[in-house]
Amino acid sequence: MRLGWYKKSPEGYKAMLGLQQVVNKSKIEDKLLELLYRLYKYYIIDCILIVKKNGFKELLKQRGWKFLLIIISYYAVRDTLFYIVIPYLIASGFF
Image (cartoon, rainbow, N blue to C red; front, side, top):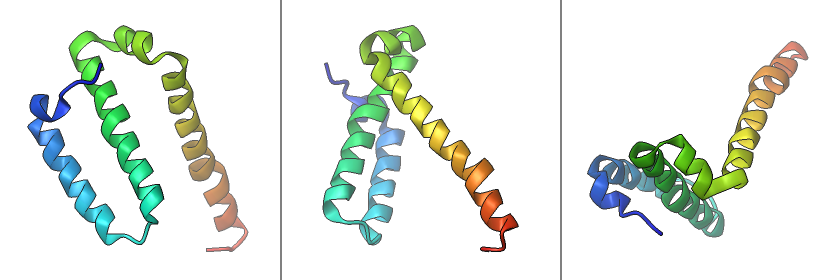
C-alpha cells in the first residue's frame, strides 16, 4: 500500500522539489541519481508518514528487519567516518 504523501504533506513535497533542483545541478551519474531519488521518495517519506499516522510499532510491522538494518547501517557508516576516519586523517596530517 502506497500512501499519498504529496497530498498529506505539501511542505514535504515542496522540500523534495527543492532537493531535486539541487541534485539536478550536481554531477552525479543519472542511474545513481535515479536510484537515490526513488529511495528517498518511496521509502523514507512513506516511513515518516507511517510513524506519524500509526506510530513506530506499526512501522516495524510494515517494514520489519530491513528498516532496522538500514538505520543501523546508516549510523555505523556515519559514526565510523565522523569519529574514526576523519580524526585519524587529521591526526596524520592529511588535512
